Image (cartoon, rainbow, N blue to C red; front, side, top):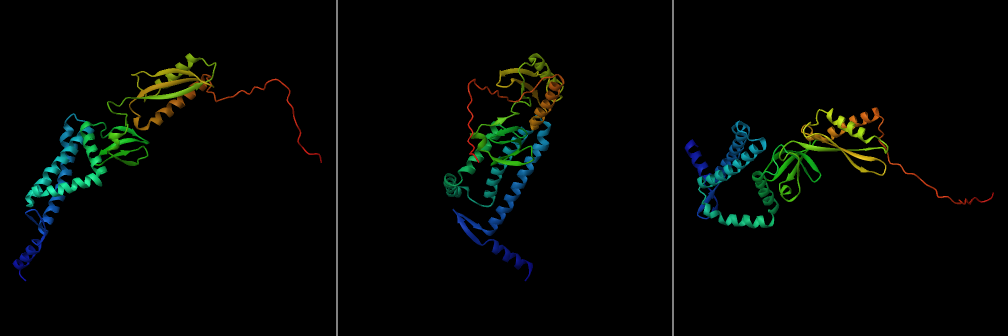
Length: 295
């Protein structure tokens, strides 16, 4: 068998009709052509997104979150235009896809509601940017940094280095705490109780000293020591400080301040009380009964 005959048989095999879409005959060659170009399209779309985010837009003043949003939107547009171009180059009449579009619409109405909801929510997030890559967020019981915003879900990395995949629809329908929405400045509160009879002005001075000696606490806005209430067992104070460096590990800042407050209070004789209860017995006769049986 010569090469020309082999090529002729391969062509005949690839031209074997599989289905008909409107006036377009779908052959095995059409499927191979479509799959290869589709894989190439996804590869080029990913390359385009990385090039925009990591090179082209780096020279601008856009922050990383904005660059990620522009890159993702550009990728979606590129995929849509490229898919239409591939279908036309494969000889598929786009008007014949109306039936398929109708079937997809029915599928969305029944079984693909969540997927469509998450995808549309992802587009809204990219345009409105209530969250962006690099933000520190709290949603429900999940707290962490946004590392990626995809078409269906968003990846949140916790302090335990655990990646949590959150559906995009949750960011549209639920309340979100974004610690870095406008800037990186966040206020921390440290409650403290001291014993009754303590010098409250000295307590205020020591609380402010503990804040001023901590390098992670900002001088502006200034730390504030508030006398909050007369508690059952203690005079309740609250130290309020601002920081930009420990948003990702707020417990470390609170712990450091607690250590410093404890040492300063101990050095100056300020007592940190624990709950106490006084038992008062009213005057009167107390009758004691011996229920022991005689031997």
